[in-house]
Amino acid sequence: MAEPRETRLKRMRMRSMRRGTKEMDILMMRFAEAHLDAMDEAELDLLDRVLEENDQDLYRWITGQDGAPGDLAPLIARIAAEAERGPAA
Image (cartoon, rainbow, N blue to C red; front, top):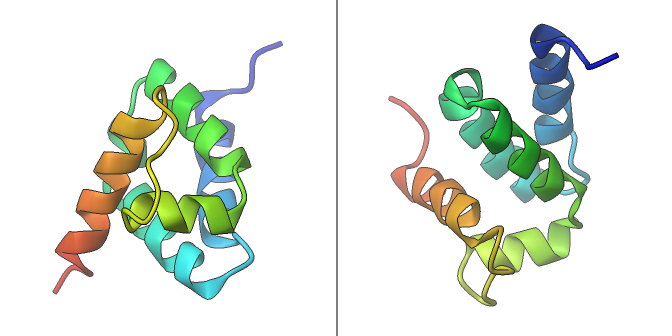
């Protein structure tokens, strides 16, 4: 049985804010708060894959220190753009 959307979004929010490093907690939670509810199933699938990555790789990809893997690169670019915008006032 497929995971209900509400349950999936709750799980993904938790995984976004409990990453392991404070920097990634902030970056991923900011993105989740801004975009998670509007994402379609394919985007959620991709974000689930991103959430499986380790914080060190994710941080290097989001900050542009290393290139993200091709299929994850568009989503990583969206996360990086959200990070550059900073917190909502």
